[in-house]
Image (cartoon, rainbow, N blue to C red; front, side, top):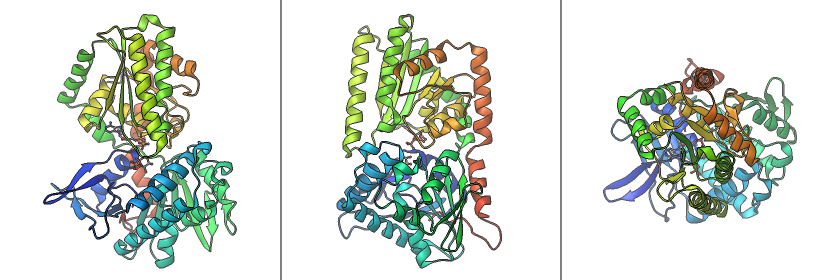
Length: 470
Ligand code: ADP
Ligand code: G6P
């Protein structure tokens, strides 16, 4: 179960219309459901009037593999739980934007009520011995609610975003309720050792919890909860395989030919202030100022998808990005050729991979990011062994990808220097780095991740849990 279903749902004549949702959680978790079956409980991105019926059907419709069970939110719940507590409080706090966190009791009340509703949906779907797998910061109270009613059900939780140090998390007046909620699980996973350590240090503030940092375990209410570092991987075959298709290679060539510059840089992000897109554009401008020899020779393609657009910070970041694109194109374009191409729409897998293949370098430079799958997707798509990954040290993926060019997005000249390094790097060094990155991303792909989760929970062994991604 996750707040977001892999589809957004719209009422349509003759049944619901489903569209692919965009985000790291959906990209990473859906292949597991496609392979293993189960039920995905979540929200379909719409608010519903009282009396409206939620969707419950098998997907993909053309070849069903698992079921989606929609949880409907009222407009007030959507504001208080989703935009309010989850995205205006927990999200900024976890990404260390403490000053941006909106801490309001009425949002917390809505969050608790919606978590109760998700827990009820889990209980409706949970069969004895079947795993309830809860995802992300929207649903922290669900594990304890489910355990209260059904102590026999195995529960796992995966936290997809950064877990901040206790100094930030304990700003929340309800921090202990959230910790107790999470500790209803049998196992809790994080992307990096730092996040797991921050979590364990924070749990020390919960009365009655005993923490064993070395073993990665918490003793709470007579149960041992295991805390594990399990960075999500990409579906390697899907990206590598798509990149090998002749039609996709031809599309990459066509993109290069259409742009007409010898060099291409690429950014792919949800339009979120944590992704550092205005900072990246500023660094690209500083790079063009410092290296006029590259003017007219490099195009930066920024692909963005709108996200959480009713939260003021998200409206602001979109405005800043659009202003920066206009400014750069005005200053550095020559009327016919412009240095920045800005595209706001979701891409198909093929189109995304063709862009990854076309780009000399991917700029993955968030101010803070749980993991960042785009970094791994870029590497998995570079079947030609070329391309450079410019990566922020503040993305969780940096802990696993030391051969990337690391650049600090908070310092405009450092990031500009990273861009220059990537473009000027000699082909042999590019090849060496990319080969090492590909080995790492392949070894720790999505299959590896799921095997780890499975062995942690001993899912599928006789007499133990079987997957039921309620
Ligand atoms: P987050 O989960 O914060 O959005 P990630 O980088 O981990 O960040 O995951 C983003 C996912 O969304 C990736 O799988 C990426 O390919 C996908 N994505 C982002 N932008 C687009 C887009 N414009 N079209 C299609 N997929 C996109
Ligand atoms: C991040 C979060 C996910 C979320 C996704 C998209 O990846 O970890 O939980 O689904 O962003 O955000 P949205 O608010 O559209 O679901």
